[in-house]
Every structure is written in structure tokens, then in C-alpha cells.
Image (cartoon, rainbow, N blue to C red; front, side, top):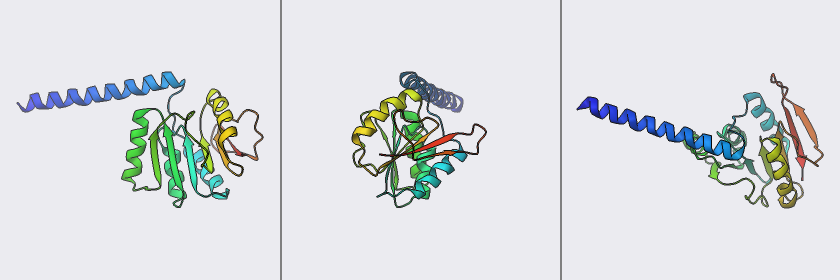
Length: 182
């Protein structure tokens, strides 16, 4: 009897893992890219840049993936409200649970489309996306962000925007972090 219960539990866990992997694969296929965690050196660079920006304290990470960048920003900027937007369910749930387990009440994660989200009241947008997503998001941010808002983009520049600053990280890829003013 114990063996049967153990086998049923093992099959249930295997089924859950399979469904989770399939959800991630499907969303990655639909998005054209899979969720990628930001390297630690890049996260430190972004947080250092955030500390220098004037802000009322509302930051959105467009495409937050596994939440590593939003969570680190939340630890560094406790007075800010940090919102991670992710359309892949499993990474979003993991991010949400990590925020809860670490008691980061200033960080929240929502399942949403970064192209339909309203950025009008946002002070800072952080993104680590791919060039196609940056092109689409560029138009949206230009029309919605208020003057004085900032955009921090990891790795990929915004088309037709002039960065205020470009920081080269000290990682093996020499990752660039672009800082823009709306």
C-alpha cells in the first residue's frame, strides 16, 4: 500500500513537472525567447543606476522572467514599488513565491502582456528583452511615459532613442546597460 501511494505521488510530481516544462516551452515559443535570469554583475549595475535616478518610486520590469532583477531592485530600493510583468506562468509564480518567502512586500509580479500594460504612471522601466521586443516596446514607451521617466535596458538599445548613459558591465560578455530619459 505504501509503495502504491509513493508511486502515485511520484507520478503526480512527474506530471506537474512535465506540465510546467510544457508551459514554459509553449510561452517561450510564442514569445520568441525563453525567460532568462539576469547575471549578478548586470543586476548590480542596474541597481547602482537605479540609485542615481530621481524617482517617485514606481518601477516596472517589463518581461521579468524569473524575477531576479526585480527582487534585487526591491531589496535595494525598499521605498519603491516594484512591479514585474511576465506572461509565462511558471516563472511568474516562482518570482511571486520568492518575493513572499523573502518578505519583499514592495515587490509584486503580475501575469500580463508587456505590450498592453499601461506605463503612464511609471517612473522607471527596466527591461532585458531581445531586439524585436525592444522595437515594439520603444513605440509604446515613447507614447506613454511622462517626461522625467527613465528606461534602463540591459543588452539591447532602444531604436530611435539616444541614451543618456551607456554602462559596460564587468562580466565576460561586457554587457551594456543603456539608460534613457523619456
